[in-house]
Image (cartoon, rainbow, N blue to C red):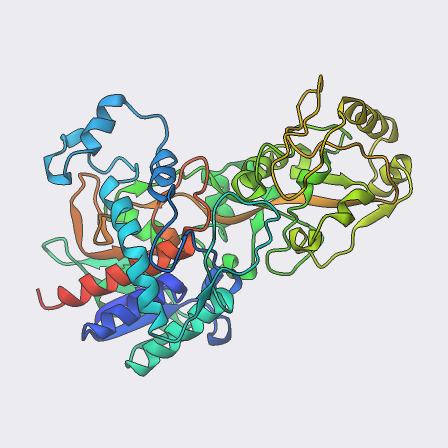
Length: 482
């Protein structure tokens, strides 16, 4: 086996891994970055995302940032455990350490370091602005890097290269090696020439397991066959980083049986062919029946909840049925990112035929929905409380009859943006073991950090990668001679 020596070995070249590499190199460390993809496809999912950031300015996160993460940072909690988590980590009862729930110290660090991390990124030439999003209605502001995630990847990679960071493309991480004291001393990888042992501290920034059908079936279940990654970069994320850390006793965190769901058009092969227009129509399944409230609130805050209901339907698919009214909504095309045209029909019966849905059932569904709509002031760009009456399930907003041809429809399935299950870290991005102790020499950043349960705290994933990547790189550089 070949061997190379570094101070810091980073697995993954998305925003998290590149942030770690740059920060470590700035701290004087000798760094190598491993990437499974070819150079032209480097960046993982980061290169394909618009990279929404849950910030109200370049220096401050949104007002609900910490609360939302804490609320959706665990499953059912023993009330005594909540009290223990409020104590400093070293003072907590043994049972309250490394249970996979979000550590309050980690959330606080995340919020506090977001602004300084944005300032750090601006030093590499990245610009940020409050640009238009695909959400026609939203509850929170979202800061974006100009040029999206690709701009982040290219700026960080250029900085890393200028600092002398080595890159190993088409190289897959396989396992971790520890010394006699339990310190992670090396990462063994495979490239085109065979096995190579890369000695040094390790930062795992290689994503979740959305690209592994085996792990998806094991954790999410057999219905995972009705999911696909949101973009091509997701196919490279196959869970090796999580597995190799768990194999040496790392603690897991996050909801392993869940994922971030986003509504997409299954006909399309482009990156993130999202369909966010559904609040202005009705969603029907293969039986031609409604199954959920299409508009419980602003689309940015509720699309994941609705998309999960779509995933539960037969064959994991549904259709949004719209009438001509939706085309008069200002900038309505922002909510439709698919490159495929709508299915168009002049009648509901014609739409049933076009979608191969039972005509009688679909006509009855639309008739029942239309009858439940009530007169009111339709305000499509704000919550208007224009709700159905006497209909189950209710539609809470924008409930107007579907009675104006031509009718449009789009198929919708749930995409897997990223998996929730991953590794537990402390506020220094150090991976901890099952007793809550840091595993010496091992860090994690980005999607591989398990932080979410039930509902994703929107616009925090890329930010998490930058913040904890930077923290991991800085800490690893400082400890390289310890």
